[in-house]
Image (spheres, helix red, strand yellow):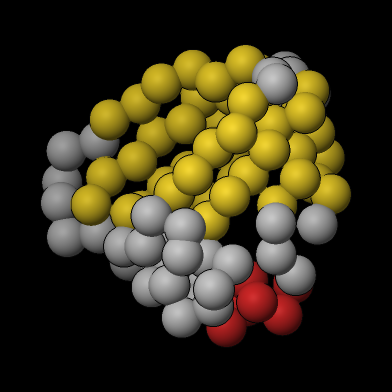
Length: 92
């Protein structure tokens, strides 16, 4: 999937169980822009964060809750389909 995100928008706020092979791990290629990536273990309470600038490859293991906040307009490639995303996306 090719995904475009406007500055300030937040994506994610979910985790994957690894049911779909494309979510074990989830691989995202940030091709333009900068975003803040926040994550924590699914059952954890403490968040960690980092700023990611393109070009970058991001790997997110199963059971890691994550969100992306675009610092400016961003474009990314997710190595999965909408169907794979739908079957393996869970919210707290």
